[in-house]
Image (cartoon, rainbow, N blue to C red; front, side, top):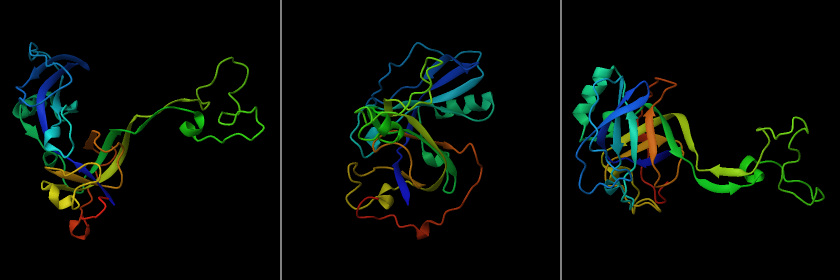
Length: 245
């Protein structure tokens, strides 16, 4: 079983320079006219003379995906190598598009990060899975049996309590990348995916499940816990499904 991710190209908006992990400047490219961002572009910033790290500031292009979204997501991408190499590569792609095929290949292991489904404020039973109390227990049933000792006089952080459940960033490690297909039609069931539509450009197939929801940003990076490469024989994988699974 695989998860199909819509993977249109990313637009490199800017270079962000760091000195001792503190941002010291940005260099922005000219953005496409139809691109909408939630942040205001800092057009007065200039490239600093002294820095020890360079990162890419990239924006998604939802108009090239299958979902109806207008505002682009903006995030950073770290680069590998020496500072001079990072700077040269950043300058070469500034104002251009980058694709998944430029960094990954089938058989690679990747780490996948996304924000999980949010449930808002929930009680300890749903949040932590504790046992529901018996029928004669203080006439309260969906609560923790004990909040700890009377001294010291505070509630320990290990005690299950009500609070925010879900809408948290989660990362799953060592997921095998099965396929990167530039023609989304090859990995799309007839009629498109239920609740999403038809991907327009390239798609990524990842073995198993990934965190996050439909139409939510999913970030992929090279696996940090392994350097294993497991070749994939895509001839034995069925990409067509009537139910979009």
